[in-house]
Image (cartoon, rainbow, N blue to C red):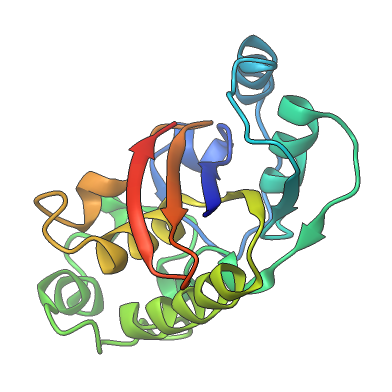
Length: 191
């Protein structure tokens, strides 16, 4: 059996101001750095763990602060959704715009944010990457993003939580997904 541990990056200005952001390459805030330092050494990791990130600055900084400056891979397909015209804006700034209302109401996942991605596009690229990692085997810890984690868990374990947003972990937390030898998901636990 192999394991995939998905950890959400620590706090950024985007988190603290409750903004929609994916493509903006924000660094961690002082509070985000302090959170990482408080959690360093607290994770129970399997032997032979491989480290990776989405390649975004916030994920890179979180990995280094939590686990040290060691070799790791980068998987750009595990970056956050491209938010297009919603990028770096809050709910209050967007709530009355027609495109935002259409995006919120879209249950099919096909609505493409102008200048950004649809939920289905994000799910497709994330699923492709997670399936490739499961086939590759081994134990992986990847620092990535809340939306990526929610996409992964909601698609692998439908009905495991009430909705997509319920899967999003707090900063520096996530889930461990165990895979059977045939690369099928066998279960998950919060981390």
